[in-house]
Image (cartoon, rainbow, N blue to C red):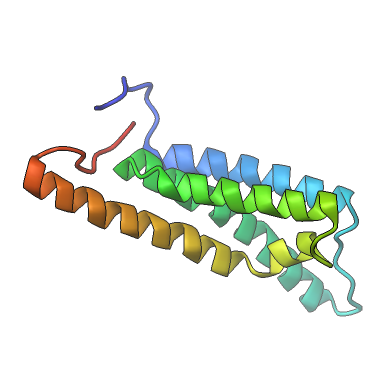
Length: 139
């Protein structure tokens, strides 16, 4: 099923979603005490760019996979991991959930993309046997 086109490309959807995700998550984290502390300007620049690029990619890649290949699992896994971090922060079940979210974003992104690969393999297999549920663009 293809949604009606509104002039958006998968790249534009991913870029817009990645920017909004990065702004939202970083604003929440920084408002709750996560900060960069170093006397070295290069270390501060690296830390800030690592956080911004990481949050952008964590939001953008799952949206690209969803809009380009109609893979929903990466989006759901990303939102679940963010929800788990919020839950750990609210209930105090993790010592530093907010800073950990910024630090391990490559692992979290890898889990989301891995779930998308698993979904793609299943859907391609079903498509080849039943001619249903193939991969296709949403926009």
